[in-house]
Image (cartoon, rainbow, N blue to C red; front, side, top):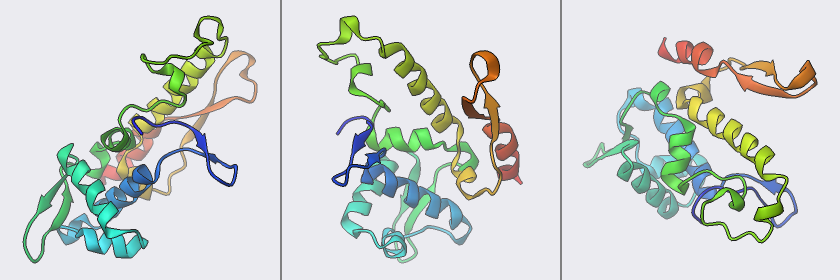
Length: 178
């Protein structure tokens, strides 16, 4: 499917990202974590996470096509990041694999929702969408390995108990650059 949407699994639990996005994150994180060893083969990643090698190879090819990783041929070939882990965001990885990030289909321009004219949830959902997108676009691959906990800031009127994660780029970005 194009884009990312919330959905339900067969067991009735809420699902977020597709398997393709999950595998992509795992692969990118593994490549980032082992970058000092040189290129990492698709076979090694598939074995490490016990994932189908054919599916993982297609995901890696898509990430290479979007210039997030580069492939190297030969006996010591494999994949390497095109930039430092601190410079690649999770949002970039998801969009490279899935296209635009949408938590509901009615936020898409092409939506044909019959409730569009009288929907009272569109505005709040857009705020949630913006917060998710901002978080994914500021969280880097380097942060996936960090033990730092992001700061929590209260938002909204009266400081209720609504919170949002913030300060990721500054605090965690510095740790990743060390």
